[in-house]
Image (cartoon, rainbow, N blue to C red; front, side):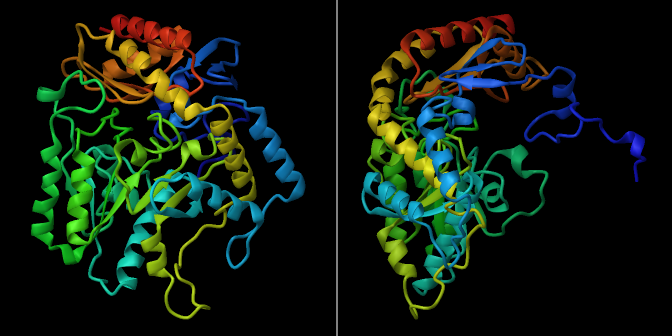
Length: 442
């Protein structure tokens, strides 16, 4: 055991074990954020940084919204916490009804949790429970996709396909297979919007079904646009093909819309944009504008109804969280819905998408191997340095921050997703700084 003298002192950087961060590297040269408003952060020394990533793809309505603050304070004055096990509070039912009204198709039930990771694990469990309830309990397999990100629970990393998220943690869930990813650099480099080539990649699901037999497969889970891997919009027609194959074999289709949900593509959800209704949809991030942690699973009628059987006094789903539908989260999420509606932010994202597209593609040049965009998001692949994978991506991320812009970095890819309130002149600033950072690290 360490002696008391080795314990970290107050207010230094040692005590916090940072997530998804090279802790030792960071603590030698920390990048700290102290204040946020609108589309900007400020560092502790007062330097202004434009938020090119909406926090972590989550602050869709911009930082420091007084309407959300007021709703949280009002709720805290009324009631700080109420359980959702065998009890309820009005705002949870009101919020679920509002979400059901805005969702496409018959996605009309909401199960709430606290994050995208919890939402994914919840969706997987709902899928298993549904298959068992309808007498098909042998359907226990899940199909994910290479390069997919579905949070960090054991269920999420099992169906996910990002190598570093998986390789450290052993066997994970059994009975999981993966579709190939959709990034076809040879045919689709520098695509604007949905890539033209690759719909046939969905047919790989038929091969997997033939391998395992449909009677053993519960669900397929994909991000409509893969986000954390560097933003990969789907090939034209790909998601519809997946839907058709799932329908043919009685397999549930889960869309992970943690990133695409609540306006990122210029519609409420990617399901609307692509005209494909999943059986289950996971959400988080933009649901509460990241003010209070919240996630959820939106459920189609036939899945919900399929679980509502047996005696009325029987629990239909043995699953939930202490903070499911937390009163403060529900108050925040309801206020966020008002902002999205009153400010027309989904349409605003749609209207800005072409300007954003032109801006990011203007960066095409030496040292850039691909640029992808759809809605108000983009991924830019940088030519890696010899024998130093991810080094250029990291250096570009750091340089952008030094120049006054926050971007996301994964490997040698830069991803951007500004708040939906962004102005055209701010898009220009994002593009200008990104270009400078890329050139400085070539």
